[in-house]
Length: 443
Ligand SMILES: NC(=O)c1ccc[n+]([C@@H]2O[C@H](COP(=O)([O-])OP(=O)(O)OC[C@H]3O[C@@H](n4cnc5c(N)ncnc54)[C@H](O)[C@@H]3O)[C@@H](O)[C@H]2O)c1
Ligand SMILES: N[C@H](CO)Cc1c[nH]c[nH+]1
Ligand SMILES: [Zn+2]
Image (cartoon, rainbow, N blue to C red; front, side):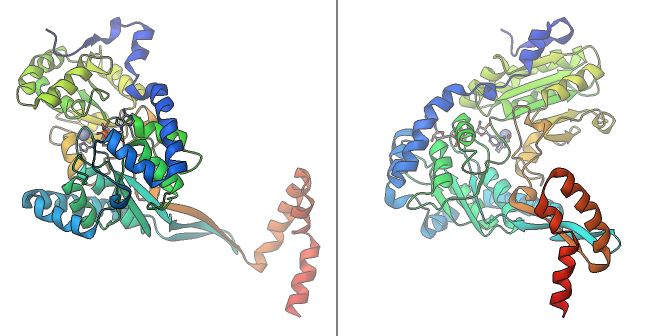
């Protein structure tokens, strides 16, 4: 039995090549249809709908009265989670904080554009942001770290995490540990589309937010799409995906090992190895069963579904240039450049959300510990969006300041354009009328 789909790129038709670029998210119309009534129920019924969906969709013991995580639940989480997991969370948060503090823009810059005339930017925190932390096919304290830390570094005053409840009605314990250590203590037990609606419209318990960030299943992606006129939905982060670009300096078994990292997220993930080395491709195909033997049943099922389905496999190209072209056309979420000399390839890659260099930087390290943000645009959105960052939690205002000596030249040119565009008030405001008031004020 073949371990993964194999594509000889040069022999594919144009349609087959285009099909390789598709993700499970490419068509989410079925989710959109099913999600619309959920959003409407939350808008009209508030907490009652959240509790009902929690019971129906998450099979969780939630009520209108216990939607918000209490301080006692946080304390219990610290007792429940192993010390070495807390240590790993602390290590990750420390690195993520260092990275994002470095990334934080200066509060303001101002440049003298012309003598006596200044212009610049000022950055201020967005006043309220909701952080979506998934929980379904896994629990995600790491997503809590990746969303909370840049938000806290940016200085957002009102932060709330929304995350699906487990059947016992509680939130994943490590998620609570990560939230408190990162500096966020408002957490609601609500997930999926209903969570997006709750923070968009507000309910009796949950205050509306101006923006929601964080990755999620197609239910979350569909809800964000439908509510994008009500709340800022940030960068589009859907089902995880990976591309391994390998040259002929590495063993294919290593490529297979890393290919499985993101393929195991769910059947809706995407995962490709692209290489111009037939040896690497064949070694990878041969190694997959060995790797599956060391994985849990559920993760084997998910990754097999991806690698033998329509969103994954091994692509053999006829040259490294063709591999570069495929990577750039695909625009992956995570890209690993598996090579003894990764930097010789870097300049050829322009379309990828995250680029991990060499044989010792697997996606796992980037997801949990390294520092750059692992909430990343999927489904080819890497072509226009970047990873989640401090900049997603601030907005920019332009600042302009024209001093009296610089005014006349600007007024003359602005007057001309105001007349041309047909705006008389614009023109009047920079005409000699202005001088009469300035003289009066000055006495
Ligand atoms: N792009 C990124 O940066 C990134 C990072 C981490 C995770 N991810 C992805 O996020 C996703 C997380 O998905 P997940 O399922 O684990 O968690 P999730 O929290 O996104 O989805 C679970 C929720 O979906 C809703 N749901 C489930 N079945 C439903 C149904 N039949 N009808 C209506 N709603 C339903 C429920 O409310 C449930 O709480 C994965 O695809 C993972 O690959 C992406
Ligand atoms: N790979 C995910 C982003 O696509 C992040 C993650 C967290 N935990 C496991 N993986
Ligand atoms: Zn992952």
